Image (cartoon, rainbow over all chains, first blue to last red; front, side, top):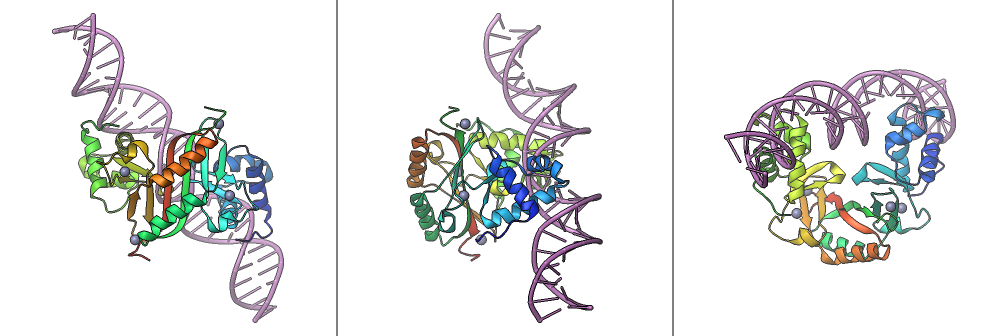
Length: 131
Length: 131
DNA sequence: ATCAATTGCGTAATGCTATAACGTGTGCGA
DNA sequence: TCGCACACGTTATAGCATTACGCAATTGAT
Ligand SMILES: [Zn+2]
Ligand SMILES: [Zn+2]
Ligand SMILES: [Zn+2]
Ligand SMILES: [Zn+2]
């Protein structure tokens, strides 16, 4: 997905996520943007919807939060899975790709004639610092 | 995790999930158990908490739903990851394990000195029938 | 048998996450 | 100019999960 010029709201949300040290929930983003005129959840969710579509933001399903893509310039997202290691101590997220895992999963799905459209790989635990 | 004798509520919730053809949300389970005396979400969530602990039920994070374990007698859960292919057409879920994927992911995490505690692998798409 | 600790249960209230529905304004091509 | 697509603002509502409080049953010493 090519990334067009972001709108005002999309830019605000994206900037908040980019500056954050950990994933943020939609409502946390809302709070951080109240001074910028945000008043309702939908303003955040609409911006997030586009940012997710453009691939510059990821949603972490297991913690209902959002994070800026750590590899915005790589093309891995176009043909590979993305995995996340989420530290429950400090909240930090490591985003990574592994083609071996990809292929292995995809092969298995293919053997079941299952057509994959969206994948979630999230590992929760503790990072080196927080162990 | 060894599975002790289930309590009345746990049994009711487990039976509902076992009979279901697709994952169920907590509130759907609640509705199905109103005739059995269930009145509040907490009755469901408390039962689910235990069932998850015993490993006889899995939570699907990407769809906020719960499903009975498809391989309750295998010991894969003790040392391996579980993955789910979720059909967005019929709702059916295929639960599977792949040690190759396991090891690959675990090796990567180890290289980052990340201590994994819980993993989520969920692929959404369409099953053979619904494609 | 008694007491204390644990566990499960019932109910009400609350909080967090996400979407539906409706209307406005703006830009742009037919 | 008209029609359409799109972003935006606001209110209300839907859906998911937990906190808090109290009671009852169970267990396991003493
Ligand atoms: Zn990314
Ligand atoms: Zn950490
Ligand atoms: Zn299982
Ligand atoms: Zn299907």
